[in-house]
Image (cartoon, rainbow, N blue to C red; front, top):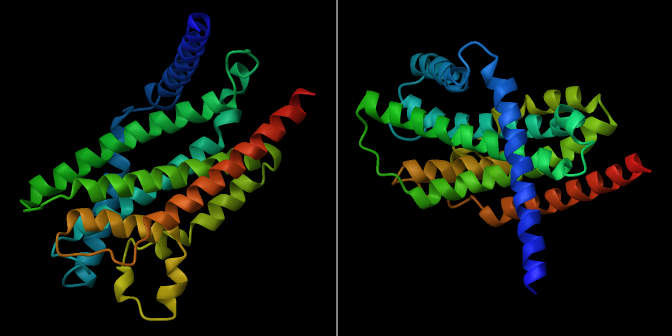
Amino acid sequence: MARLNEILSQGRFTWVRSVVSLMLREMATSYGRSPGGYVWAVAEPVAGLLLLTIVFSFAFRSPPLGSNFALFYATGFLPFIYYTSLTSRIGLAIRFSKPLLSYPTVNYIDAIASRFLLNTITNLVVFMIVFTGIISIYGLNVSIDFYAVSEAFSMIALLALSLGTINCYLFSVFPVWEQVWSILNRPMFFLSGIFFVLDTVPEPFRSFLWYNPLVHVIAKMREGFYSTYDARLASPLYVYSIGLLLLFLGLLLLSHHQRRSNT
């Protein structure tokens, strides 16, 4: 029994060491060699939010929720940016880490886990900086429901991880899928609830949009920042079910692909 525990402990240590090494490698290549490094990770969403705030503040008297355009669009834009960046980055995990996958201690699970953890931590920091900045600059009196915000973040994290895992397989087997995925995601920017609240959309469009899991995530995120808003149409169970199903399918496809590649 003691020997078994020792083997399991060594296995966990080896896995953690592999994941951390891959994270450090990506940090050096993605941020360490680019101008500004991590500053760009914050500057990019801030620039997008600033543009949305300026444009829509001229077009409308007030946002669909509350009175602050920056906060309203941040609660939709930041989860969407996290989703798009993570699905693409995890999709490229095998290609990025291919030179290291020849080592017996490194596999595709390590590559996916390292990209998921690094980008999730980065986006959490971006979330905190941007929301703290908006609340401080505008002097907003916001009572944050951290449970709702955490649930929204866990929903989008699982969804992005599952779709990224499937993309990891498809990018490897069908390289053209990378361009197709980029094209398919463009309409999602307008159909995910960044600019609207699902409750105010008339039928039959509301029922159609309900099947978009990103709508549920953004609605839950806004529930966390607007105490008067009840995301009654949001279903975390729906998002978690889709995420777990797609994650299982993605890992199954990758496992089959790896076995074929090794034979």
